[in-house]
Image: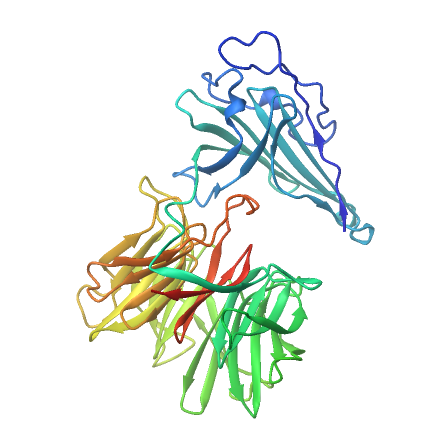
Length: 503
């Protein structure tokens, strides 16, 4: 991999500063080909603060509450003498990919501009370009226009507003750090996306592949084995004398990887299930173990994995109703499937009569239905639902506690809810006893007591996110969470594996 040269518009501090430094127009280069060549052609508010970019450096939360699922947490750096830049790495593809990538940042002290562009010569010069133009407003917010172009949809523009963003609260409350491993171990990286922990082994997947980690001494986790890849989710199945990992691949092959992890020191890729999955779930009923796939379609494929090295497809459950983006994740609870159907909401179905034609039991609207968990708390069936989108004036990143009894007149209705803050979404949830363990991206791990499901109460947290080192996108921080024994295990996008203990 080779780094692309970044052409940065330089600005000089002028002598016309009054109370504070004012930056003069830059002498740096701008792109000469492709879309979005002219920063001043993009409409911004008339009240942009002249020289206001002196206040740009730092973290922002940028969103449009009325624009579906458009948000990010950029980190800006710079000043009058160096220019202002969005701080993130851009790398060229190698020559075999036959792709030309460029990035420009430019500023005149008042208006910030960046543009990235990729041209794919193996696809008849198919082109993608993304840009941002912004300025500081008198109220201290950031006015932003997003620029989007591709050869199919041509130019599109989205407006948004940025507000200052920082960690929500102190590092920890009623939790402590025990140990961690990553992000770099030897010559390999651990950028965690999800994990399973059992029998003192953590099975971690992420953007660099699959890792087996000995956590018998949680203060000193030790990597045992590794398989290269880009894996989003993982489940472990025991059968036929084997320990097998099923991993959802995002590595370009779009298949479910089958990894023999019987010897944790030497995990081995074996074969694939020839279907795409973003998320996975497992149900075990007596000797039968089944694997369910969430794959951004309206269907949920199911496989018999009782012999995990030889999966057998047993059908596809087609969720009723309109779907746009498809199913992101799901919870299997007896004969019920709770499907996180992204922009089509959260749907509950009964598959007992016919798996291929399930009966809808209830549906919950959601800005972006992302994660769920079904549980029985003190004899009451509940379903937890996590939003990831930020739409609406109060945000949508709620943990919603729903009535989980299909015989109840309030089935799938809110009976309680919890929100860390409106700017941060939920990634994963699981329940142990009366407590929900939530991976909350930039808000780290949040533990919520549900002894009274109508009044969820946060009882502990640990902020894993570091605003100084995180790259500055929509998805950072804690994404995978598992409670095992006395410890809480976290797959973190920047830090790898983190091991915590409740106090």
